[in-house]
Structures are given as C-alpha cells and as structure tokens.
Image 1 (cartoon, rainbow, N blue to C red):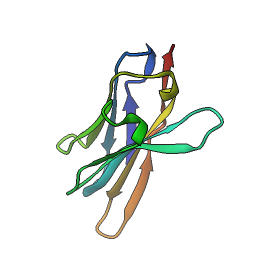
Image 2: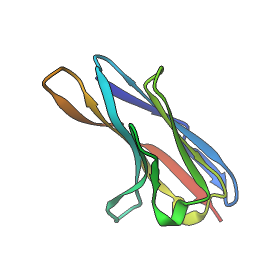
Image 3: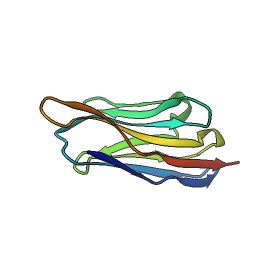
Length: 119
C-alpha cells in the first residue's frame, strides 16, 4: 500500500492550492484520512482530518480557509487551501489509517509535498 501526494507549490499570500493524496494497493477499508504540516524546525501538526462516520476536524488557524474532503471510490483525500498565509508554509504530509487485511490496521504516510506561501 502506498500514498501518492500531489498539488504543492509556491503561491502568493491570499492564493489557493489543492492537495491530493491517493492510496493504492490492498485496502479493505479506510478508517480516517488527514493532512499534517511540518514547518522548518517545528513539530508535525495535524491540519485537518476526516473519519468515516463523523465530520471533519481542523486546526483552529485553518478553519474557514481549508476544506478537507474524500472520494472513497478513488481512495483519495483532498485539501483545498484558500486565503493562504505565509505561516501556512511547510511540508504537508498525507496520513491514512486503513485496514489492509481483516487482521491488520496500518498507519500510512505520504512522502510529503512542499507548500510555500510568499508574503
């Protein structure tokens, strides 16, 4: 099972980007999907997550600007980022918690995609 991310880049403050993360391989069921962000010299923080059967959760600083969504048919999670700020800069990592067999649950990470917001 692997995660493939896309959509990062360089954008000016106030701009928008859309990140995508597709999970491929042997997956029986996806439990949750989310995006984390790590700025240089800082810890990796949860930005947004979405769990089967419940609504999305967001970091306070991105509420009303970012939207997480998922397409279960494609095993893909998206993060629409609007009104971007310089402090949103960092490497964004996709995270998926999935049942890969009837007896195993895996915590999967993408390779990371750089988002840079210039002021």
